[in-house]
Image (cartoon, rainbow, N blue to C red; front, top):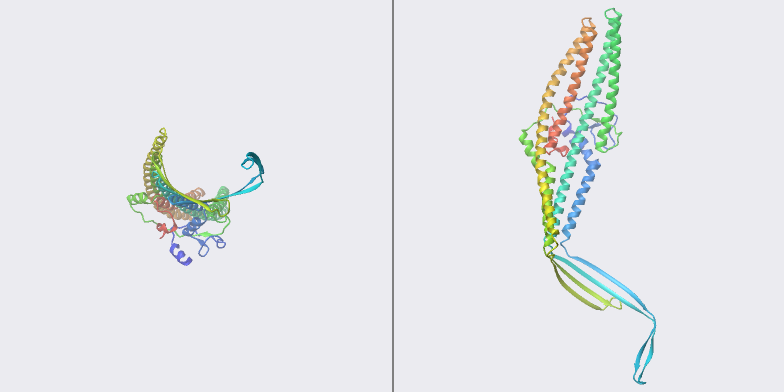
Length: 456
């Protein structure tokens, strides 16, 4: 299975990112050949992230509450048993003696009296003014809303993991560039020293080259720190030890399959969990209106009891009863009417929130779509500038070594080289993350399996 996943995601999406050394496979992450792919990072985050675990537990709680409302329709059986002992002290009373034709005192000895009562009661709601049915529907919609919120959290985590993964690759790209810059300044310092020794250039050329080399070394140190921070951030999102050792896949796709904007808008209206949540909220608010109206409707309940009483256990005297009770709150001073008004206004608020959410989603998809197009254009331009900057700096070094260029021209060419490289690194990051944001805006960035656009 691991080999199959490795083959499936080996051609992940990333352009020209520089490989970096591994120091052993992660302890808590599935990797292939010490390489953590984007898909594996997402799967690890989905399995370990505490926010997702909490969201899933919330779904379980909502489902348990729904089961509670469902069981309210079933008969309720209660069994009770009472046992008591009563102490009666001796007392005197008068009784009429017919033989002597007068009243005389009679003494009664102390005694204990026992009382036992065993009762079984059955209650069944026959009609509650649709209150139980409305409560059940509300609870069912709460389950759907909780599931939608859990899916929203899942999609947010996938986007966060994807962004953190690309940030790590971007930081390694930057680190490699600073290392290359340091090597170039070392070579330039060597050329400047040689030219100075030959009397071709002034001492200032050597001093300036030394300053530029020191700056390059400082940038390299900053880049190394950025790599560690990016790796720590990704580990935190994945829910693994922050000191886990791994290396990331560096194979990226040059282009992504891009559909029309209408395709992504339609997908968003169908797949966005926020819309599913607001629809469940609407249905729940509608059920709340029905439940509130039940305050003015009659209720009907069936109650049956069987009772055993006596002075011994089990008591021998039994009785039973069946009662059909009806209750109707004919007038409550307008309390129910006020509650119905509140429930109706809550429903109207949910309707307004749904319209607002649709507008916001449309805007989000539109922005993500055009941001991706812009990033693609900038990436193409940056790639061309990158090629030209390589050649320009190479020629500037050769001309300076031959004494045909000044030190300023070499350093200016080096600055242009760094700017072109940094621009390429940034536009690569923008392009890949823009595609991920478009998928999330369309509601389809919920697992590694849906990241089909990241394959070459």
